[in-house]
Image 1 (cartoon, rainbow, N blue to C red):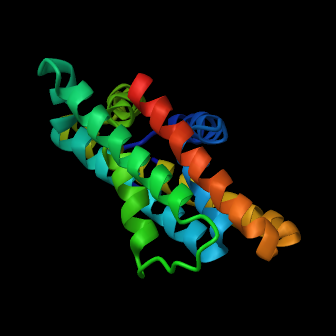
Image 2 (image 1 turned 135 degrees about the vertical axis):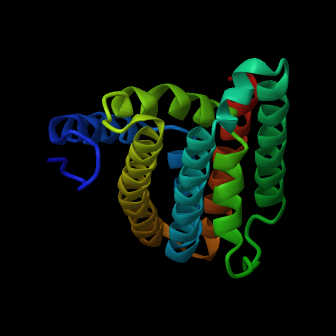
Amino acid sequence: MAATGLSLDPSTYVLFVLAATTLILTPGPDTLFVLSRGIEGRTAGLRAALGVTTGILFHTGLVVIGVAAVYRTVPGAERAVQLVGGLFLLYLGIDALRSAGSDRLSPAGGGVREGFLINALNPQVALFFLAFLPGFAAGSAGGDTAGGTSIAILGATYAALTAAYLGVVAVVADEAADVIRSPRTGRWLDRISGGILLLIAAWVLTG
């Protein structure tokens, strides 16, 4: 009997959760992005975390339907998407630096869209999921259909764990910024946020 009520072996699922948790706790571009938004405010950070989580579900869907394999088979596809994602991050970073210290208000859902696009436009995430998820779903009983269902469950689990972790990152970043937030430090906090975004852009573009 599977822990999920479907075709996943309980021990395999537990192993996946442990492996996923270890990977999620390793700082990466998504963590840095949520941190940069959390510095601006808790709501912005939580919206960013939600956007990243939605991006993970998007990549899970690509793996299930096989689209992620295109990055391996079409020459230049991975690099093209990577450049788009890196340039988008570069734009966000420059915009944050230019508006440092201003009282600009992000439109409702803006952080969600940014978080989603940053994750969705990172082909390395798709390739990682293409290698990571099927390995744990390989033993699923019931053939390809059950395997696809298992991958979807694993991806949803990964997304839930990510949402919990990034939610904490957003709250902690906001609390830390509150300690030093003032009219004088607000500009520097915005500059730090923009600098982090530029760092992620360089990470993606050279990755």
